[in-house]
Length: 79
Image 1 (cartoon, helix red, strand yellow):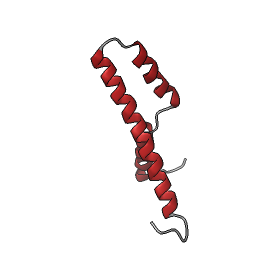
Image 2: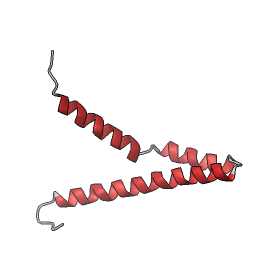
Image 3: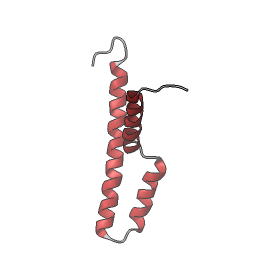
Image 4: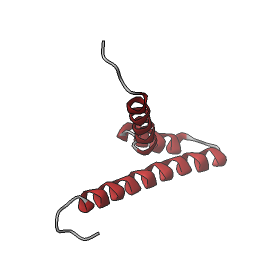
């Protein structure tokens, strides 16, 4: 049997939770688009649009964060 340190489990779960909240699958974004075309309630449309906008913003910010981290790890590149 293998021993696993608690901190390794905590770190893995943390990364998975953050990833699940920052990276929606493309089918989820398409689902927001479909729902926006069929939703009749103005309040419902507003909520769907906010969810879609937030998902896109999180994706953009995560891509920028990853690019910045990659640049920081490149030799000879000033941050």
